[in-house]
Image (cartoon, one colour):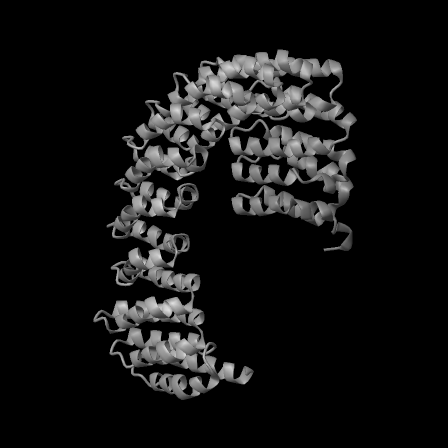
Length: 587
């Protein structure tokens, strides 16, 4: 190809590939738009590439999605901010397609470009685009327009601002529910750019229309608007305009709307302030906690601690606690699970006496729940209660339940308890641990489930770190080493794993005198799996013990294993020998 045709080559390839039947080629071509734009230069990108993209009516959503994504970051390739307006036509077309994710991406790209455009360009190019979309015959254009007002509005002259507010008001009353939904979703963003004088009048009137919409999908999006608008209004206006809406929504006939209120309640309380929360929102929240739809109760139960933090303890005990007691025996396991995940946080809010009197019985009933997730959520947050009521009370009331869970028939529950043991141990102290939990830790090393045995071996190591080598030497090591003679080879393997984890914690001396002889003895086992695990453990011990011990004890054992009839045993033994050679060379 001659050098004169060179600049035409990239665009020719692009056009060919964009018209190709193979979607993958079209996608690759669109993803390389920035490379092609660089090759063409600013001028030709503006005059040839962008018009070509505007006319390109690809019907595949995947291609259009990538195109919207690329165009959003295309300002540098068309010559900078002063030429940003050339990117608007192809994106305007994308704002009208059927596929929602393409439209959303196009709106996102337009917002990004509009935010960088110069003020006069926004007025000249961006504002007319917003108006064209808002007046679009097809609802998709009107849906997209709602997401662009907050970019266009700040730069508009006064007369146009009035027009934009009027257009948005019409969109809030559009015949199509999808348009009203989009208007409800974007109202908060638009309101944030509108002057305070119009906020109380025009924006609030739009908000009122949306809150009374006959479609629950519109009303539930208006709930989100409550929190956004609440942050923009003065407290007294918030109480006058937003509070009645929240109270009404909490009794809405659609459970989806009530669910949204329950989900957003904490943000709504922050918007209206502490006093109205106590007087008006507590009854609304109690209604949601007792809702007849499980989904609403789940959302409300998950916010119980956050909500109680906004109240004084007396109010929480008087109004919220009775509901919490009811929820702890709710017919839906998901409601109980949501409650269990947050209820421990109520202890610091209510204080010691109320926790002992009112909350402890609830914790205990949830700890004995037949659904594993409920019990699990309680176990993982015990430290929050410990800080409030102290270890003695905690151990008397909750420990029997924990011991019961340690032998639970669901292995995931046993696993959660094991992972929690080191934390419990550090909170309860050595004496308490030895009495109550020591035997359990040994019992888990012989569990039928591998994950439990593996976690138990890690648990033994973490306990040795927590209480120190001397304690471990007295309470853990002898019992662990006794198990190496278990008739079942899988349990013997667990012990080898535990030894490899304990050795770095116990130090060289104890490893050489107590742990190493047991490992070397195990190399005579009749099961090949044990023998190659011995080779792995010996390899992990090489850096811990002295060189002389490696020479006298470890290497002869590995040499013997390297001549074993089993191929895997020979492989791991040779690997360990190579490792020992490297250690010797480096030292």
